[in-house]
Image 1 (spheres, rainbow, N blue to C red):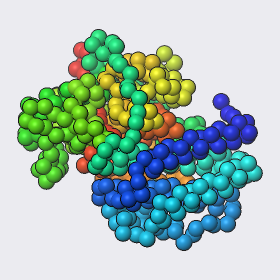
Image 2 (cartoon, protein in one colour; image 1 turned 30 degrees about the horizontal axis):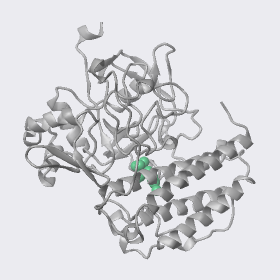
Image 3 (tube, rainbow, N blue to C red; image 1 turned 135 degrees about the vertical axis):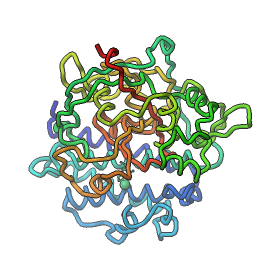
Image 4 (tube, helix red, strand yellow; image 1 turned 180 degrees about the vertical axis):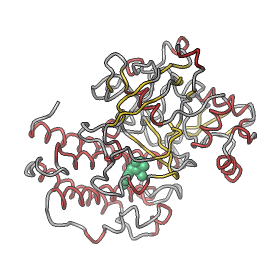
Length: 440
Ligand code: AVJ
Ligand code: FE
C-alpha cells in the first residue's frame, strides 16, 4: 500500500520524533560522566553514538537530500565509524554532552523543515522517503547499540520496563516444526525501506528441515554447561575452541555462579537466571557448540528466512511471520518495551505459518551463514553500509531482539557480527536435517 506524499511526510515526522525520544531516554538516564565514559572497549561512549547519529543525519538529509549548507563539516571525521575504532573514540576531542544535544537538535530542526519542502520523487534516494527511513533505522540501530552499552555499564539500575507476557501453552508446544522441501522467494524488491543487503527478491530452493519451535532457553543451556559442554573440545569448531580457551569462557556473558545457583546481571539487577527465557549474550561459537551437543546444528540463513516468511497456503512470502501488518505489542517483543526476552513460547499471535514462535523479537538468532550478498546485490546508497562487511569474517543474525525497534526489523532484515561477539542481544535456535521417513 503506497502512501500519498503528505501521509508519507506525516509518518516520517512521527517516526523521527519517536526515534529521538528513545535516543533521549538512553542518554538522559545517566549523568554526564557516564555519557563520556567508556563502559567497555567494545563500545563507544554514549555521547559518541548520539553525535554520530546527528552527523549521519546531517550528511544524508541536510546536505544530500535537502541540498542545504553543511552545519558542522569539521566534525565529519570524528564521527566517521571507519576512521576511529570504538576503543579509541574516548580519546578524541568529541562534542561534550551539552554540545552533542544541541547539535542533534539543530540538525533535526533543519530536517523537519526540509521534509516539508523536498520532493519525494525523481531520485532513488528520496523515492518513498528512503533516505529518511534509512536515517530512522540508523538511529534505532544505534539505540540498540546504546542499550548494549547500558547493559555493560556497572552501577545501579537506571532503566525501567514492563514485565514480559507469559507463555500459557508453552508445555504443549512441539519441540520442533518441520518445513518441507521447496522453493521460496528470499529477500525483497518491494519493501520501501529495506536496506541494500535485503535486496533483491530471488528464488531459493531449500531442502526439508526441522527447526526448534522456540529459541534455546537458559534452562536448556544450563544442561549443556552442567554436562561439561564448555570443557569438551568435541562440541566446538577448531576456531571456537581456540576462542573458548583464550577467553576462558564458562557460561554466557553476564552470568556468575556461586557454585550452587547461576545468577545474571541485567541492566544493573542481579537475579537468578530464569530457566524459561531464551538464552542471550552467547557468541556464535557457543551457539554452535550447544547445537552440536544437542545433536543438531544452527539453521542456515535461508532456512531461517523460509521458516519466518514462507506461507505454504499461498506459496508466497509474508513481510513478518504473522502476516503483512506492522508489529503490534502482541506479535513480538521489540522496541525496548521489555528489557529482557519473554519466556519461550510467548507471542502465539506472532507465530509463523510453520508454527515457529518468536522468530521476530526477543533475541537475535545466530545462523550458520556467512554475511554474503544476495544474487543481484547493488550497494545503495553507500558501500560502507553492507558491502565492505561481506565475507567469512561475519556471521548473519536474524529476527531482532527486545532491544530492536520495529522500524529496524522485518522478515528480510539482516544483521551481522563477528562470531566471537557476546555483548549484543544474541541467542539462537537449532535446526536439524530430518531423516527421509520423517518428511513423507
Ligand atoms: C547492521 C548492526 C551491524 O551497528 O555496525 C550502524 C548498523 N551501520 N551504523 C552496526 C550500523 C552503521 C550495523 N549493524
Ligand atoms: Fe552508525
